[in-house]
Length: 111
Image 1 (cartoon, helix red, strand yellow):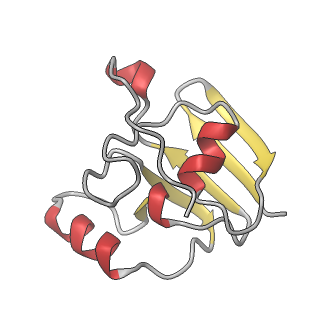
Image 2: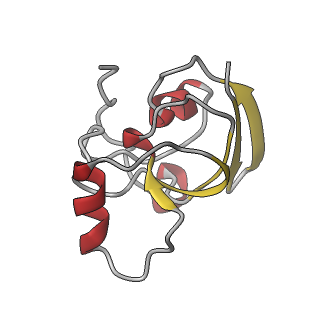
């Protein structure tokens, strides 16, 4: 199983995730506070993470088009709802519900 290291506002968390699971779900299921306002549909960018190490896989068209609209995002910023946990990753969670004072949003589908 891939090893995931997540840097959060509450400190680092390390865990193993099932291969092929959406990163946003792996993070949430591990108890990590992460926003996902659009429900994992690559529409809002609230679930974005900074890739610090590892290979998140190729960026799909939905994700590429959505991130292209945002200004001032680093090249290593990705949408966790569009990343499958196939390799070890180290990420920085950029938006947390508790920090922003918001509801996380609907749980993304497993698909």
